Image 1 (tube, rainbow, N blue to C red):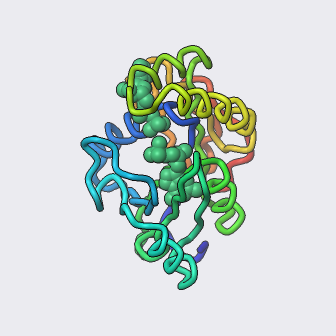
Image 2: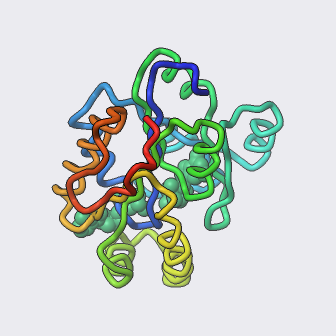
Length: 206
Ligand code: ADP
Ligand code: 5GP
C-alpha cells in the first residue's frame, strides 16, 4: 500500500457533515484528483447513480466481494455495509495519482493502519444543531434516522483528534478552498497547518 508514488486521502464527517457537497465541488475544480466509488448494500437515494455515487449491490454480492478480498476495507454504518474496492485505488496510487476516499471513522482508521502515509481529513459541522438542520433540510432521512445519525455524530466528532486535518464546514466556499489547500500541500513536509482552523500538528506523515 505504501509502495506507490501517489497519495491517499480519506475524508470523513458525521452524516450530513457535507462530504458529498464539498467533495463534489473540489472534484469539479480538480479533474486530476481520483475519487474512489464505494460499494454499498444501502438502496440508492433519489438522483444517485450506480457506478457514480456508489456501486449498489445486494448483500450476497457484497459477501462474495469480502470473501474474495475485493475490499481494501469495509464497515457497517447506520445498518448498511460499505466497502472500498481495492483494485482501482491500488492502481491509482501505484500510478502516482492522488486518490480520495469518503469513509466513516472506522474505515478511515483502518486505512491509516494499513497505509500509514495516508492523510486523514475530518469535516466538522459548526454545531450539532446546525448538523440537525442540514440533515432535516436534505430530507433524505426519516426523523428516527436523523436522530440516530445525530447520536452517532457525537461519537464520531469525538474521534476527529485522530485525524491529520480538521476542516470546519461553516461557509461552504471556505471549506472547499481549505480542502483544496490540504490536498495540494499535505504531501509537503513543510506544510503543517491549513486555512480555516484545522491542524492536528505534526501528525502528518506525508
Ligand atoms: P454528507 O455527504 O457528509 O452526508 P451532504 O454533503 O449530503 O453531507 O450535506 C448535508 C446537507 O447539508 C446537504 O443538504 C447540503 O446541501 C448541506 N450543506 C453542506 N455543507 C453546507 C454548508 N457549508 N452550509 C450549508 N449547508 C450545507
Ligand atoms: P451515506 O449512506 O450517507 O452515503 O454514507 C454513510 C456513511 O458511510 C458515511 O459516513 C460515509 O463516509 C461512509 N462510507 C461510504 N463509503 C464507505 C466505504 O467504502 N467504507 C466505509 N468504511 N465507509 C463508507
